[in-house]
Image (cartoon, rainbow, N blue to C red; front, side, top):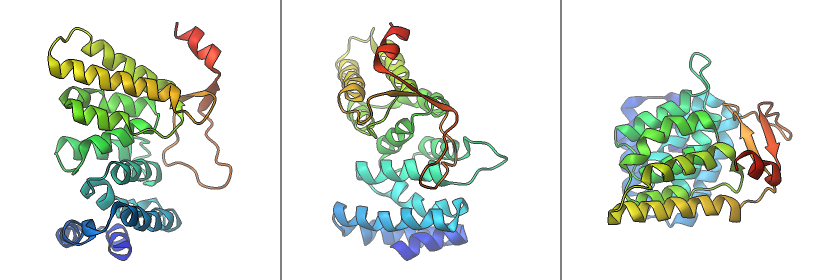
Length: 229
């Protein structure tokens, strides 16, 4: 699977995709999730060494795997590592949104959750129109995709979502409201960093031991509460 995914990313040959899809769905998915995660780790480690143009190697895991963790992680990596077209930082997120709108991902909620987990306001704006199409189970899946780093734009994304739902009184709407509220709670309760981040994520994400993210700033919780009161 590692070799086939990398071959797809290097060659970018659309004619070979049907065979890769068949191999993934009929053979690779028989492996337990832990093994698929292990194999994906090999691909995700090699792609940056080959260059962002080979990010297509990640797409089978993003689009064909039903597991929440595999698909969402692959989405984060695909958008973070992929090279740009016309120097547009939203090249890869826009590509993923197009795939979602065409019903290509096996687990679209996981892919949307991966986009949310990027913590970039431009990406949140791209996917805001999609959230109205999700059912309660899909919303629950989206809100479980969390990196442990809380971004201001994601808090705003969830608050705006709750505003859209607050006047709904049907059973489905109340279930969705509860799941969005749980996602908002998770941003505070499960965070690994003691601060909130605000700003624009670099695309592609720079490599190295100490990558620079010049457009990101840290907000201490008391300041964040005061500004958003």
